[in-house]
Length: 293
Image: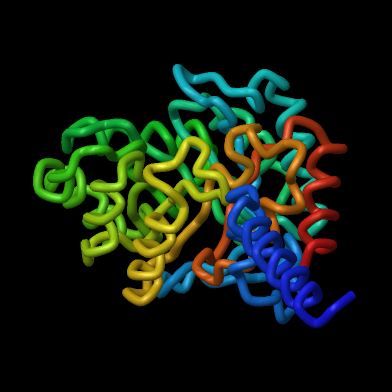
């Protein structure tokens, strides 16, 4: 091959390689953009949620896959069935129970709590009430349903309004007072629009945020890069950040390793929640988290 032909060949090869990079699937591009994961991660690692002082496991056991109207994929397992999954996780060092009134999972979590050391478990739940009286009633009812004197984390569920931090100030005041009385240990919100997420990042009241994040933008508030930029602002402010929709509500069921690698490599999440629908599925999630890192 002549020098001229070699140069032309190398030039064409370089252009082809460049084109291949730019044609990569968005998931692959985002994984390539992450720095190498420098340390080992395990589902049962002990993490601290922001500046709350609450220590729990890196993996939270979700109870609300497609959760609404007091039902979810997990509650469909029945009280004993879901409690068995939670207790299986507890036996592996998972200490984070992620519940909500709208999932209908309080009785299931309560059953699991009967068989563990309550002081070693972080119980997170969520309220859809948007007025002071409703939240006060919820705090009393939630504790009865869960069979516990206190709640570790209570979130305003599914916040969407760009003015939520002023519109729902009475709700926030009730939760602040509950924290002062020792009824709850921390408060915050789960956000379902990018506008609400941006407000949460700036609000001193938000101590814990439940944020939707995965590498393909499935069921998220905005594209992953936009959401991550807001989460970095949250992290800098000392808020506890718990990721949800890590598997894109099933969209990444066949790309779980990539999804976990993305979540772990971001360096913005204190913890993340995944809802397993069986003991075998939960065991697989725990194994994969250790393997990808």
